[in-house]
Amino acid sequence: MTKKRKPLGILQWVIMAILFLITLSMLIPLLHILARSLSDPSQSTAMGGLEIFPRGFSLMNYQIIFSNPNIMPAVLNSIFITLVGTLINITLTIMAAYVLTRPGLVGKKILMVFFIIMMLFDPGIVPEYMVIKSLKLMGSQWSVILCQAVNVYYLIIMMRYFQEVPQDIYEAAKIDGAGHMRTLFSVAAPLAKAGIATLTMFYGVVRWNEYYRAGIFISSISKVPLQVILRRFVVDGDVTTLVGTQNLMDYNELVANLDFTALQYATIVVAVIPILIIYPFVLKFYTKDAMAGGVKG
Amino acid sequence: MKKALHRMWKDRILYLILAPTILYFVVFRVWPMINMRLAFYDYNARGPWTFAGLKYFKLVFSSPAFGDILKNTLIISFMKYVLLFPFFVIFAIVLNELRLKRFRQYVQVVSYLPHFLSWVVIAGIWMSFLGPSPTDALNEILGWFGVAPVSLLTSKGAIRWVLFLCEGWRSLGWDSIIFFTTILNISPDLYEAAKMDGANRWNIIRYVILPALVIPMTTVFILNLGFFMSAGFDQVYNFTNNAVNSVIDILDTYINRVGIENAQYSIGTAVSLIKGVVGVVLVLMTHVTSKKLTGEGVW
Image (cartoon, rainbow over all chains, first blue to last red; front, side, top):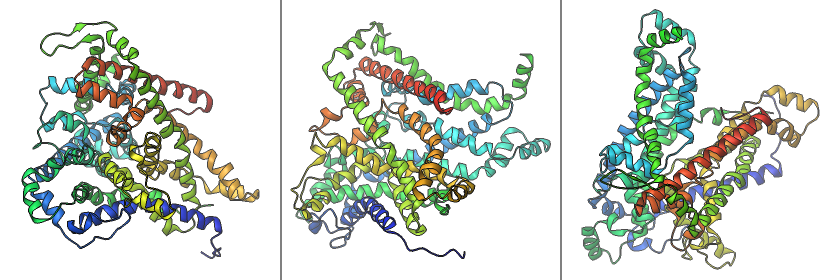
């Protein structure tokens, strides 16, 4: 690179300043929530919304939410729904995408029209609720797991990944006498693993973040995922569900007053941690090309 | 015909592999669609439903709330899917113009993140940011300029703009990826040719980059119209409160409230049916128009 580096013009600096402010609007609220959740409850009620360092470090808020008998089961429910749900999502998506990308498949056009209709037309929550009722899945976590088993949009993305696998490889597998299941799982899937990894993460995030159907279909507090409990506290202002009746009595004697906002933030942190764990992999698999692209022109 | 049947028999394993997915859609999508006939029936939990004709549609259209709800839906959708739309394109172009690559990557890493947070968490974050107390983030900033504290989340005049900004905050990075990668894939020859003709940065954006973005812009725009009747239920559902509900009550929150919370199943279904049909017609119309005008559709 012998290109001479020109100094950055005013416009570049202005753009960078604006972009920096935008990123601050994303970072500061998150850091503030983390900071307040890690603060000493007796000091944190006075914290300003722009403070990003804890006041008097303490894990008290986390102790309180995890000693609430509702939280730990909710976390485990979320993990169960996410793991089983994502496994079903990705398995069905891979299988369907493989079939739909086989050359010369009879009825492919009709099938694609069918899937597009499924994508475009949403029957709405009430008719769906009726089906869950008819299937006797009300109150069961399987209602939520099964009712969102395949996303057509992700299915189409998966098909694109399979289309990029060179056709010769399928021919070779066929000559070796491999059946479709073997070709799919030991030839095609490994070659499309970037796509599978990406979609597994997308599905996983959707599963982890699900709250609406879980709130309707699963009513029992011991079976709902964390997001449902979080919603009751954040949106509906239901303190008892989050903190627990026993805790409310116990801790009020220890601390003059609890910082309910900080308790809410601690729960938000718990709900966000799995996303942050997944996030670097999303960047690595899905946005790698976008992030690596050099400046052209 | 015989050949096709023969081929299908030969591929029977393939259809078997596809079967679970088809079964899923039949049970959880087609069956609900069949259940939508409930819009024309009186619900009965124990026995068969009794035919009610257009009773529930008349009820919906004659209710004074429905007009407002439809209006709210269209206004919020217009803000989110039309007004916000250029910003994703601008963001992608601006990212591409950044010369400090490290800084660009930093912006990308941060701006893609909000897309992955649940709407419940986002509501929590925004409630904290826009809280009414003078120490909450926005009011503290306003305080530096001597502006009195505001409570935007409970302000009828501001709440739609809060939804608009929040949607932008969440999607700015992620939804611009498609435009950004399109820009990255523009052939270097085009830039060279433009430079030979003496084009400056603005000319390049105008005559090289923007034309390349027409195709993804069309696709995204048509797909967005598919969401037009939904207006982003999850966001509204988590941001709403008694003070502002009348200006942001949309079709889906209405369906949820009437159809699920009040168990008025037939009314909920009737509204879903109206919403679904209008949504599909919108997408098909735009798809056909766009195919005629630009040769580009969604499929």
